Length: 265
Ligand code: MLT
Image 1 (cartoon, rainbow, N blue to C red):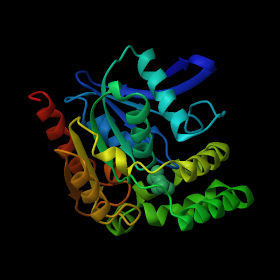
Image 2: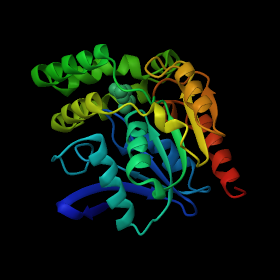
Image 3: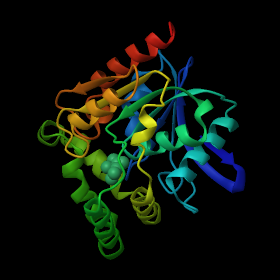
């Protein structure tokens, strides 16, 4: 489906199920197919809504690009669906966007799932690495970028035992529009530190990560939960940075329990 947003932005999205709205925000360089396991596995618990961010998947590839712009796009998207409050689940870059939603559109957030993400801003080393990745995309294209990114995104168990899934992820990454991928690298490098925001989060929050995630390791996930009042962490065995896709049943289990508890909140 396509939502037409102010400024002519077309946002492609999938949705399934009914009940409490659950907005799934993908990371980099991903698209809404990251959430295939949740679109298939969570509709009995929620109205699952998975958009492609500006510059990714089937959505319009056009700036301005920033983490705040992605948050504003999502706020406009939710308004177009007539939704005033949702559970926001953001993975990695999607988590950075969730922090921006907290800063700019807090009333929209009924509860939060922070998946494989961090609150801290980039280090100088990370920023330099992003600039190198921009060079790779410009010189060699998304196929080469995808091949490099794959190894760090998936757990050893996934790389060893799920060749079809590895190929699906590779294709998702390789098909990301280069303009969107480059713009998002710059946007992530410029994002602010959100650490001071954590103590101000008073909606129910679940932090989830993969035990074998090397980009946002379990200690980062536990640190998020420790800093957010009333939050807890779930670490999924044999999950990597893309644990919702790698371990869909385990991910859906912890998220459906979390959603169930919201009914009594
Ligand atoms: C992601 O999965 O969105 C990226 O790993 C985020 C990042 O590069 O910081």
